[in-house]
Image (tube, rainbow, N blue to C red; front, side):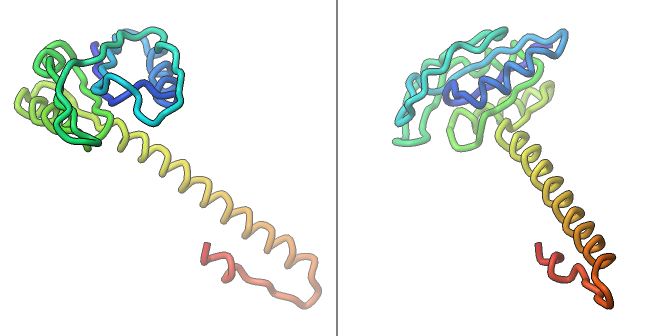
Length: 157
C-alpha cells in the first residue's frame, strides 16, 4: 500500500512521527514537501529514514501560505492513501478536491489526526489527575476526625 504525506517542510516532530509509521509492514511512504525552503526556522533536520521524499515544484501565490504545486494528479494516481499536512495552502485544498473526485482514496488531514490524538491524551491526563485528586480527598477524609471533605472543589478542574 502506498501512502502519500503532503506537508510544507521537513520538521523534527513530523520526522519522528513518520519514521514510526515506517515500522508498519507492507506500506510504502512517499513524503512530498510544498515549500522549497524553511522560512524563520533554525532547524537542521536529517532525511527521514525509510521513506521517499520529494520537494514539489510550484508557485508561491500568497505571501505566507500560498504555494500551489505541480504533480498533484500523479500523487493521487500513484498512492492509495493521501495524508495532507494541513488546510492552509492552496495545494492542500486542491489535493482534497482531487481525492474527492477520484473517489478511490482515503484522505486524512495529518494535523487534525495528530491534534485529535493529542487531545485524547490530554483528556486522559485530566481524567487521571481528577481521579488522583478524589483519591487524595478520600484518604484525607479517613485521617480527619469528624471531618467530611468533599470533591466539590476538584470538580472545577
